[in-house]
Length: 173
Image (tube, rainbow, N blue to C red; front, side, top):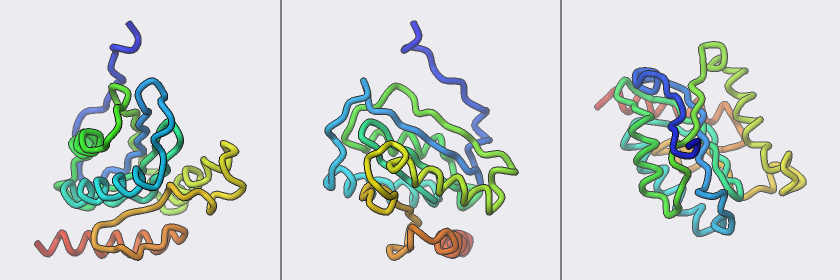
């Protein structure tokens, strides 16, 4: 039966270290009605713990009415996005479809301009879906790097500056 099959995964090493991965989690049965300020606050808290625990930065997340997207980047050789996605899904107060969809970005997609374009494309999803007039009007999106609460989500240079500072912090331990 289709809904019991697992999506194909790359070998675990593709999700470790400095991997750049686009994740999509879909609410079980495409359920809606859960997206609100309380869920967003809980999501950010759990995402912060996830990023700190698994040495990640979240370059972009967008919460949509029945699913969410994340672009996460490994900040150290100890980063493990397969473990991080299990942790995040386990601690979010919502039932998800059996397995998250992922896209491990290749070398060309990780180049700064291409990566920035992917983050902008993701950020504009609510506008393309007709949920808001401009992406800036959507309240349920952002970026997150542990230790940088004032990260400017609209400035990709700000993400990279904070992310590299986070990497240096991890290297100093």
